[in-house]
Length: 101
Image 1 (cartoon, rainbow, N blue to C red):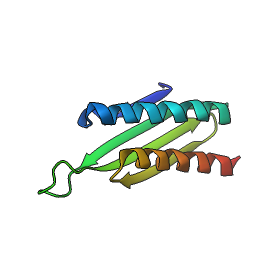
Image 2: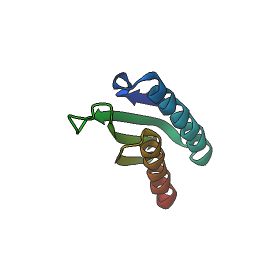
Image 3: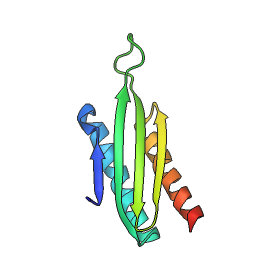
Image 4: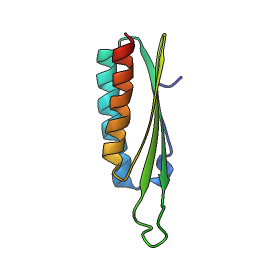
């Protein structure tokens, strides 16, 4: 299993891809320090264009999974701001694991 697996980035532009890489790497490092038994993180990103008139406006759906030796934490978030949705998703993972220890 890869330590960091991200899918769904093919529908993102270069700026969005950079946001995903930066935030994901930051949390990956943070989780490695907090949870020494961490094995990997899986991230699935989906984009939606719910308004026909405003095709440039995207809604993001983030599904994140964090695998440790003994546990799996999962989170689902949606939002109009990619950065906020990613942060919320990773914070939910952190909260789950902190309260399971």
